[in-house]
Amino acid sequence: MDAMEKTEVEILPIQSNGGGDLAAVEEIAQAKAATTHEIHKRIIGQDEVIDHLLTALFARGHCLFVGVPGLAKTLLISTLAETLNLEFQRIQFTPDLMPSDITGTDILEEDQATGKRSFRFIKGPLFANIVLADEINRTPPKTQAALLQSMQEHKITAGGNTYDQDLPFSVFATQNPIEQEGTYPLPEAQLDRFMFQVDVGYPSEAEEEEIVRQQTSGIRQTLTPVLSPTRIRELQELVLRVPVADHVVKFAVALCRQSRPKESSAPDFVRNYVSWGAGPRASQNLILAGKARAILSGRFAIAIEDVVALARPTLQHRIILNYRAEAEGITSPDIIQHLLQNLSR
Image 1: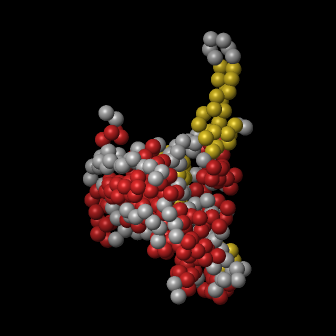
Image 2: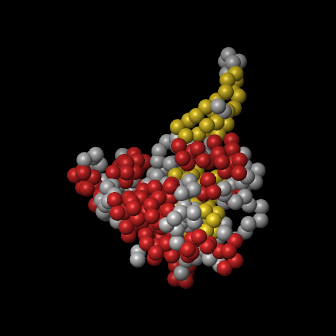
Image 3: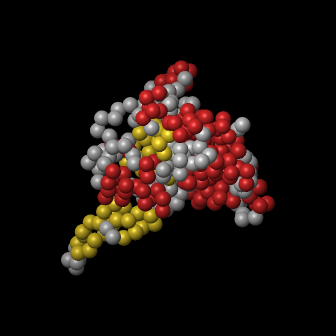
């Protein structure tokens, strides 16, 4: 019996008809609870970060984690991969990292028997289910751009050939908000590929005390796999089948359109403080992430509350502020909060 036959949660077969989908949703919520329980064996606190991480994974999205060093970002993502039995690769982004270092490269081999030489492609670390791009802003744009095709199309082109990636596939990148010496800011086109920007904050005093006890004890908790890659792909398909009411779509689209200063519907504070607002990919991600959040909560319908809850991580890296906002200390979360208040009137 392999590891995946020992899972704690049995998921009902997911069918394309509404009845089968509805029957599976309750079991999916139980799987989320089991996954969170396993992650908390090694990660203390960070409940909201874990929720965003799972939501992005089941919505087929990518996440950019912003936080100072030492907040267990790497441990969190590797623990998630182990809990879900997914192949994990960590890439340390450095100024000398080349595109072929992450996509893979052709090597020349010689057959010892015949003397015939041929090229063989050696896959890079991007050929994994979960890729941790550590300190992604420390590598030049050329290498950053090598991620774009895989993040959007789930394909990798190297040596003139295009290879399909195994699914599920998600990129979880980290970025240090403090030290900007020797960094290359991510271009807007690449930032837009990330479904969420998740801010990772310091733990509470009680959580930090527990972290110190756990990490200095020498005891490493054993994790029990909860889901398999095949089951995760099925759950990702289920997310796409979650129905969305017209008023929820209109709310998500209105929220994004009002963040654009040149739109006729944009409020004055957007015109005063924003250079560029969120594009159409943002409204799509709001709905996809809202669907995932709904089924992970045991609901087979997305509500406006789901969109509101995910507005900040979805939009904050897509709203580009102007110099006036920087001078007055206005942040993109401030703009998002104003937009939500404006739409709720």
